[in-house]
Image 1 (tube, rainbow over the protein chains, first blue to last red):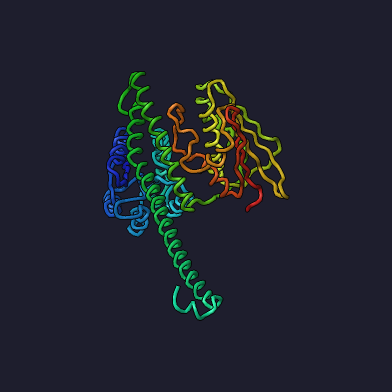
Image 2 (cartoon, rainbow over the protein chains, first blue to last red; image 1 turned 90 degrees about the horizontal axis):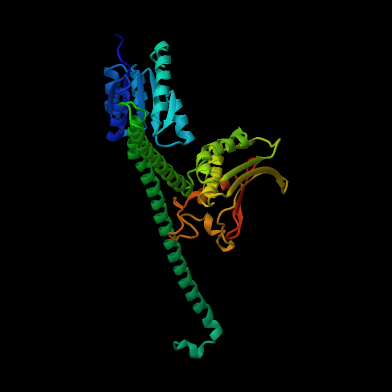
Length: 131
Length: 276
């Protein structure tokens, strides 16, 4: 039996992280949640991540710092998607430049998030890990 | 007066009196400028607080809405129709609150001059079609008719699509909100040339309660609702028109209204075709 896709939810608000854990666990994923840059980097380096859902405001700084650190450790998730509360173009541009596949405004409707996740995970099966 | 007054002609004492007054006035001016600077600093702090708090409010709302959608979509098991209605109510309420929080955030950024324009080329008719579809259920629920009319062969806009959407959305939302059952709401768009400059003019009109001319400026001010009596069941942040004006001005356009009490309202705004 193939292993479940590993979703890492980097989100510093426990209420939101719990909701995301529930959503992804109930729909056939293995979920890890973290709230800081340090913990997110450690979790991704320790256990290969298929989909990283990255909040930009983590407890110890800018969430995009996670990607820079994981790049240097050659431990990038297969797909990273930024989830943000701000919809300014400059933030979107910054996330895409940092290597995010997409940027979504919170709260993303759960139906849309699941549909997109399925697409990203399907594509990432064929893509190199550094995608 | 002092002893010198008796022996020295008054004209010679005048400069020193004038000097004294100038010094006093300068001191007052300095004090007033300091006072203005203090008030501006406090205003900026308050604006920043608004931006922070509205951003922070989104987070718990995200948890509420996500949990409710998990239930609604049957991810935790099927629901009865009544349970589904109830959970849909939670989601609608949450999304409405989220929109209002978003308006406060937009206002705060506008007040702090943190809003920027990202231009793309798009058809205004598409923006309008999208907004008509979004408002369709509300319009039919209130028994209103919504008519749209965009001049054929009108050139595409080169503007911030999201912000133009926001402007029309706010004006249309107000028109629907302030028009009683059975009324008419319309949006027209056409091109004009004003002082050698091509502009798109958008009119959002309604047969609603109208606004007396003495209040025409007031409605564009933040937090204003002309009639705050409890009998008027119009809720909102009171920021919709302030934000619309800010977004129009960011594009180098103008916004105004024509209305009389009891005779409906017609709001107009322009978006120049050429870059400001």
